[in-house]
Each structure stands twice: as structure tokens, then as C-alpha cells.
Image (cartoon, rainbow, N blue to C red; front, side):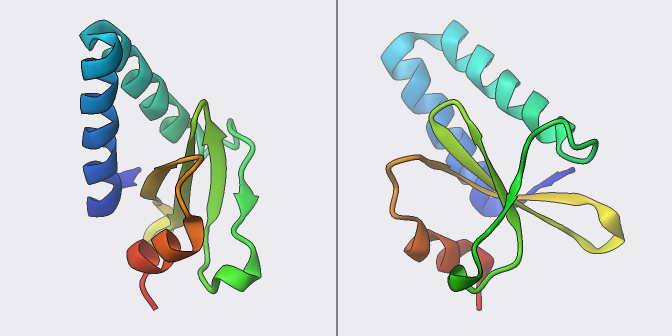
Length: 101
């Protein structure tokens, strides 16, 4: 599993927000749960759905608590975590920013 740059940035933001709002213990627990979910992708341990064709990108997504995790298969069969967005974020623009053309 590889966490790509945009996803790493978002995970850092999520950690800081959660830590500032609810404390370091809760932030640690949330991020650890997120990474546990990442590890379960390759074994079909999370229910992922394909990104709808109208977005114009190839990949999958699943919900983890209040966030949506977007991922895709990388060359060699490795899972690439593309980004993690809060459920309220506008997704079409964000997709194009992180997946590229």
C-alpha cells in the first residue's frame, strides 16, 4: 500500500484537526483506524465502489466514518491511496486535482 502525496497531506490535516478539537488520543485512534482500513483494501476487507464514470478517473472509494477514501490500483498490483476527503467536500473538483487528467 502506498499513500500518495495528496492523501498524506489530507491525513496530516485530519490528524491536526482531530487533535485540536478532541485531543491527541482521539486523533491517534482515528488515524490508526484509517490505516487499518487502508490495509484491508487489498484483501477486500472494505466495501469499495468504483468511482462513477462521469468523474473521468479510474479508481475506487469507500467510507471511513466521516471521510471518503479514494484509491486505485498501481502498477504491480499495489494499492495507492489517492486522497481522503471529508464527506462534505465537493468531490468533482477534488477528483480532478488529485487524479489528474
